[in-house]
Amino acid sequence: MRISVGIVKLGNSLVFVRRKKAPLKDLLILPGGKIKDKETPEEALARKIYEETGLTLAQKEFVGEYYESLVENGKVYGHEISVFLCSATGTAKNSGEVELIDENDLERRKADIAPSDYQMLDRTLKGDRNFTHEISVEKSGNSYSIFSEAEL
Image (cartoon, rainbow, N blue to C red; front, side, top):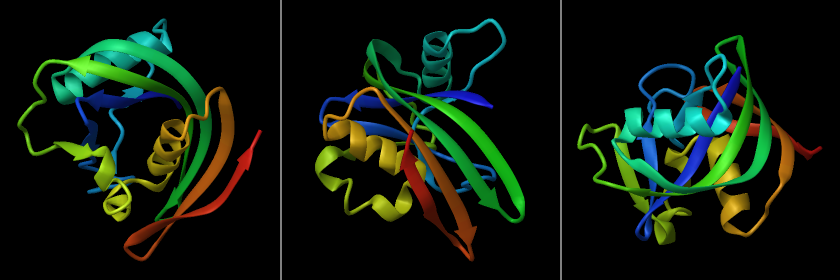
């Protein structure tokens, strides 16, 4: 499945969405989602960020790609993820699903964030660009962990 996600900056905070269903239920994820037929990754990104958060993209920069394999309860999910660094305008929805985290609190909140998303975020905020990575994540008990990661 092809997906676009945004590392969305709103002031000094980053925007996350709480996942409501499996996989990654109850974890914070980067806003974004499935790219529809005849839709560009950029169009999907703008559409999904607005739908999920109520925010309008102001700027976006393509920063890299992740090929994610996620194993949860015996089911394998495969995602080809286009990652963008973004700024946004507007007021985030007050729905309980959208959460803003100050950049200085990311390390403290790491356990609340989906592992692949945290890796994308960490890499991007450290200045990495034009990356292509493969990552495997597995759920064991109630937690997720990275099984492997490789640069392609």
